[in-house]
Image 1 (cartoon, rainbow, N blue to C red):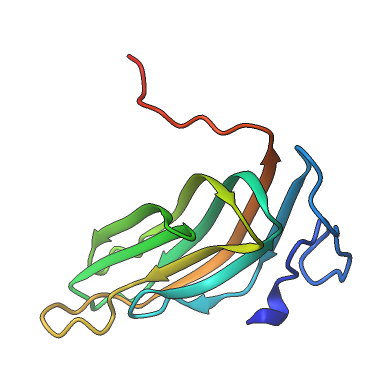
Image 2: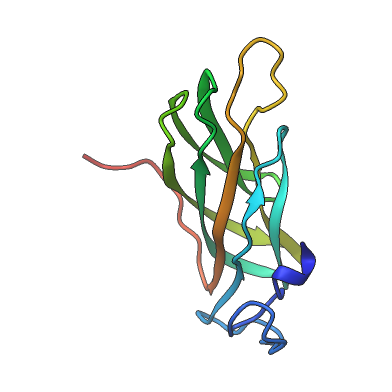
Length: 156
């Protein structure tokens, strides 16, 4: 799968154009187009190598279920940057043919070079319930280098 993405690419996936070190407030992104099966257990589906710095990291991935004789449809994806994690899920009744997009967001500071990674699972190996096997497409991870991070409670 590594051939489907170019770490640090500012062009289309696989274009071979590298952005070099990220500059302040310049987005760095990776696109994975593929149509791969969602892993049964949590595993990486794509990652972006970033130099040290503070980032707003965004990811989105499209998940599709088309197994019409299953009991349930469930996918969980996580955006992971070292110890920081954002979690999103997509679910439906078995046989519905659920399609959807999971969007994830993190603020993270890398002391050294590190990865922003998307990992997903569709629980297809659960022995107690026949979960549908899902596929993923259109993964995008975008990292915007920022000068300051603020993460606090939402106001109403």
